[in-house]
Image 1 (cartoon, helix red, strand yellow):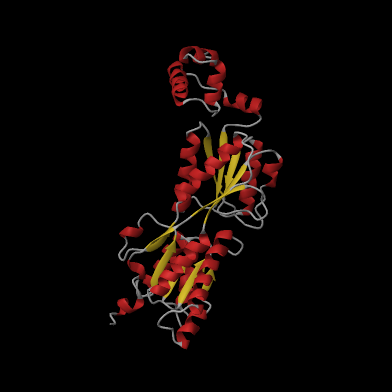
Image 2 (tube, rainbow, N blue to C red; image 1 turned 30 degrees about the horizontal axis):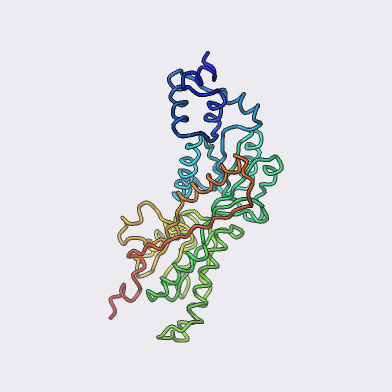
Length: 350
């Protein structure tokens, strides 16, 4: 049986260096490559179970997310995995469907399996509880959503700023009855995106617009066109169907995530309408957004970078770096396409 000493001899390094490479420790790239090449040539596979027992933790990172079907979380997971693989950690993906019971079971599994650390996109801002991990010394990083009251590192998106920019764009294009389909009540991302939408409307009403809106337009802006849904295609469809049935239907919709935007767009077209007659704007890119006709305007979120950055913070904690809690906030960018070209242009008016 090949041992760690055999690998060390073949690579021309000490057994301690081999151990550091296999455990994700810091060594020079040249030495790490020699160790990996020697291990591969000798067919050496470390006993991960035994190593886990010695170290009281495994070389596995848990990634707990609410919806693996959402392209946003798929790209985020890729960022986590790519960063983890650079230091020989593996990633176990746990999909909660936004269900707190499933989330708690996955947290229990992380403890039972002695995971090295956990990255979590919380199912609920107020009810997700990561303290059982923390009490056992398992590092935790929050990504996209921060559990309320949790003293953990976090990597977030500036949701409020991105949503305000999206709403301001719709106002600048001439839309006035602007609806917002946001996520479940209690989800931090839903609350922040709704806040950004409302702040943009308030700023527009209070500001000097050059060509002031008529009182009727002010009333339109103040109508309650907000709906809470489930961050799923079906939720966006149901919410948009309800909005279109109003006596004064909206002339634009800001969907607070990409899947709800798909559902809203489906409802608009089933009603015999077509953007940009009703503007459609999505918070979050979808892979086919540039290919639709008309192209879908989106707030693009750096989802891969969220995952990569979260993994980097977690690996620092696993390595025992003693530093203050950190929160990294990444910015989004608005990608303007034809679904928000403006209601006047859509009607062919001068």
